[in-house]
Length: 146
Image (cartoon, rainbow, N blue to C red; front, side, top):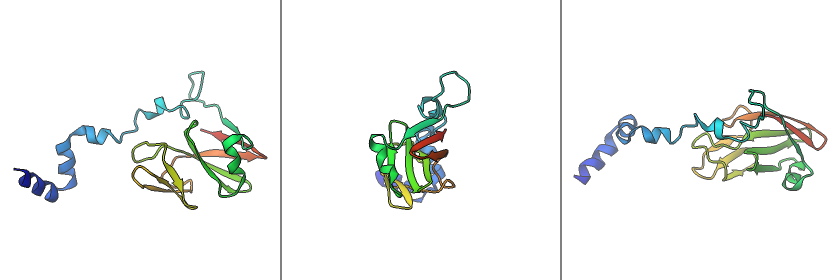
């Protein structure tokens, strides 16, 4: 009996295999309800759709590393990845992995971020797979529009 099941799984197309596992497998990767639970995406206090900008001082604590070009940080308390591109630009990304929503195990190799849960990689450009936020840098003050 076990050999028959193994043979079936080896030869069946992926859609049939996924269907045999049921909808719960597909829902495990769903991010449909994540926005309501996300403190960065849901940081307004007045119930409107307008979001207050997030203002960070690069001289504060762990953010100090962003003063150097190439410096980066997974700022887990704000659910964002920050990357110093050049003297005038810091790029800001949502740190939620598009694959399964993990936020805690990121690495950076100089051109792309890698999620340590499944080793998926994402470009450091705003046209890559990670959600990119608008950020303006004035001196050491970074203002992020979520």
